[in-house]
Length: 169
Image 1: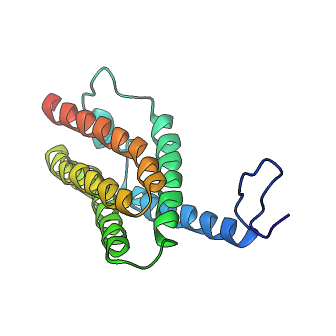
Image 2: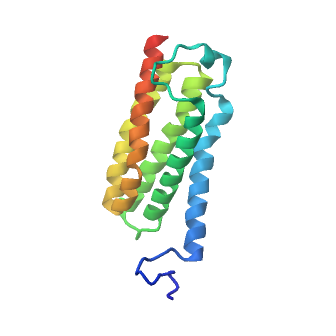
Image 3: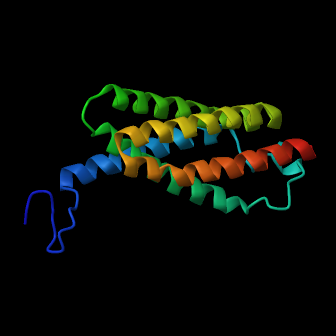
């Protein structure tokens, strides 16, 4: 067996060190992404009093979905980070960092400021930045870009949800 962890089927598995680095990226992205949750969330009196659209998911779904998405983002970020040094790689890493800033900023805008309109503005910028990040990742590592597609779909859904909450209230 090679040091890369190849199996008899020819599938290359990550080495122990590489697996630890992947887990580190997944944990880091989950910590950064979840950090804003300490500001407040759907359990606040303010939010509970808001009218929600008919398609508002059950509360537990958000934690599950975000953990899965942040985990995919961590793997994608690792794949780009490990790529050969290049201008495209630097752009991709910068795009990822910028979209994460807006991802984290949404919670203080929406829940902290108790302002669905401000949240909508932040998530609109986030959506554009996620598309740009997918494009930048694709130039470095296509599988990494593909790992961001579920995130784009969820941000799209969240934007529609945010809009409807803003509209209803």
